[in-house]
Length: 395
Image: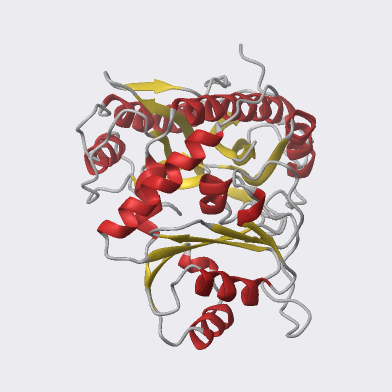
């Protein structure tokens, strides 16, 4: 097995090629340039676009703006004009990994004001600017930019970079393999810890004991346990997701879906098990969740659509006699520096191509029982290759 702690570098040339491809796509879409917006602040939400194009993440936490002292802390903005040099506005010093020349990096406490100046320097004060990561911008930030550049026009442009991110390079595939292997070791440690008397928090601690020394970061851990039948019970919590005070008991089922990152690239997988001896009904639900994922994986081939894969998995769930209830209505999603296109929903006509990496997931519930299963697969020239390698059956 490959050591998950070993890093694989993306070359400066690859980052430059990504920016060139983004420029070309922006020009084809009618933009004079792009404003790429990302957020850091110690979270794992919405950092991907700046990391994809410039290899930058801000560790500074979000704090409210204090005009005259600081603005936009915890954010990064990449100004990418159709012609000319890019400019990356950051709120912390370069740690040596930014994939841009020093002359293109601007460190500022007043991030929004520095971004306005960079847009003007790039000749975009009167231009049509595509915003990549527009959901990262607060209303206050967008208003400040628009008021400072009244001659510019703005439009969402997430699809420009999203289409590039959907298909992974060989270096990205290797990073995702390593992340998936680390996630696999983490979830195995958690499943081993799911024994009678254990708290959800103790189980997630067993997983982070694997994750953190290896350099990984936890994004989330959806956890639940319970019992089906005539007197069903459910134990879960929202904040934190491992905050339930109920201890596991023999006869319970337990499920966990974890997501996190290694070197910026995400893992996402789920497993279920019985606590103590397993019942026939528990096995039926556990196997049903696995069967839906297997049906979706079998439908993957170059040229198939995301919708066809979703319909294959969801159709299998219905064939088994289970309703399509659940907190997530899709069959999965792309994965990379976060959640990528495509989304595996029945009406998505996006064609699959080799190099896409997909998470296939499904939760099946009935009469208080639950089965949950998720794997990560690489789209190849011939089908799907599973890159998570965690133990599948715990019964």
